[in-house]
Each structure stands twice: as structure tokens, then as C-alpha cells.
Length: 144
Image (cartoon, rainbow, N blue to C red; front, side, top):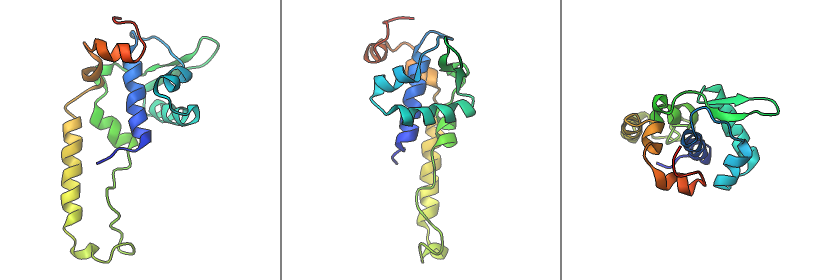
């Protein structure tokens, strides 16, 4: 299963924000520069993550973005469910003529659920806690 770039960069943005000291603001430009993704794409991602409460946006001269909740409360499976289109195959009868007898869709649904259940075991904190090499790769100070 391959995540869309929207979900991929959404998770990466959350990882970056979780790597900052608690409550610290950063800019969308800083996140886009870190990952080499277009600012326009990241604005859409941050907007969606903000609507879901994962990111808080602060307007104004000293504004920016930061995590909207503690990293330990952000379950990876929940994030993926919220932003990833999880339909693996198109089983619409007008698209696939074997849909009424197909058993593949059930197997793929089970596989998708197993994937999500595995992600449910981990939070954003799991990814960033005690991970100095990640901080170095993100261009952040070794400890916060």
C-alpha cells in the first residue's frame, strides 16, 4: 500500500512540528524548505491538518504553525484515516463486472485494516522521542 504524497508530507510536517520544543512556532516555508515540497502543496496539507486539530495556525506578524495537541495524543492510524483516501480498488459495478462475486475486495479490506491497526499502535511521539539523528536531519539543534 502506498500513501499519497498528501498523506506522506502531512506525516512529515507533523514529525517536523513534533520535533520542535513544545509550543514553538515555525513557518510553512521552513517546513517546505526542509522537505523540498512546493509551498502551495504544503499550505493545503497544513490547512487540512489544522481543520482536524493536529496543527494550530497563529496569524499575525509573529504567527506561524505548531502542533495543535501533544505529540503523544496524535495516533498515526487516526491521521492516515483522516487524510488518506483508503479505497484500494474501485469495486463499482459499472467499473468492474465481477464485483458481485469478487472476494478480492474483502481480502484487500482486511489488509487495509491490518495496516491501519498497526499504525494505531504508534503516536507521533513514538517517531520523535529520543531520536537525535532525526533532529540533525531536520536541521534542528540536537536537544530541545
